[in-house]
Image (cartoon, rainbow, N blue to C red):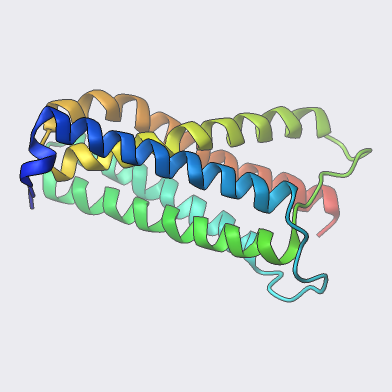
Length: 185
């Protein structure tokens, strides 16, 4: 289903939409930074302790959906590709909601200082965080181009968006597993 609106079909409309996406992405990033590093956790109990595992599952499902979508587009099955990418977007959106809830309730969880693989975990986590920040506007812009029928622009940016989004989804699962192993649970 292609939807074109007068304001989004013009170059000025496109620039405005992309500017709005960038502002929303920057605001979301600043909010997450505040939530994780400044805002005090609301709960200290183990209530909702399942959220990190849920986050890893949602990241894993997003990665699988991305790979399925990639397979479908390679086979020129546009409708199945679109469904898979919308599914990946839905899983990533649910992840973000769950991630925000977890950090609002429990704050940040730090990798133990003397745990094994800390020197692997920290750079992996840093790359995950940085690329998650970069991928958010790319994902939204890629969807914008697709949903407004700008398929050549969609293809150009999707070549960058897909590997970044996949990397962020996979490293989200890996960092979760590494943290749980280091914490002994």
